[in-house]
Length: 156
Image 1 (cartoon, rainbow, N blue to C red):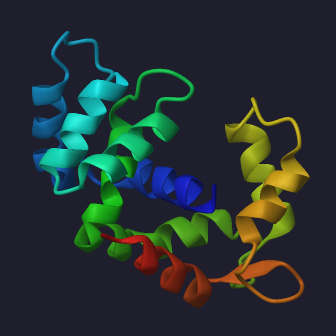
Image 2 (image 1 turned 180 degrees about the vertical axis):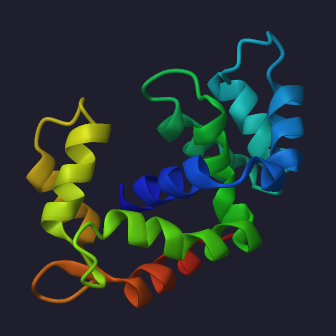
């Protein structure tokens, strides 16, 4: 869940000029020109980006659990295979989520983010606790260094 939140945040804030290649790929996969990708179209896109079939199928299943995927979620799905796009914008995403500017994203800041973005989640506190497992310190907060190391570890 932490990865999904951060990837979506980065993807939604990236300059369009940086996304030309991914936009062309999205359009080529969007066979019905709906502006959304079904799971099978998403699998094809992830494979064209270099993902293995099983990883692509697993990611597509997760990403389409709420329905077809629009462009920003497609970009978020591909960012782990495009580390050169992800990492430069991670600091900006961190700073947007660090609401009080103290250098940490706290459980409260994550709760506020999730309350606005994951309305289908019934237990936000449990979701935040799950997101932060293995990250940050005993006060359940995440530094940029922790986040950067974690996100770098998910890159293909």
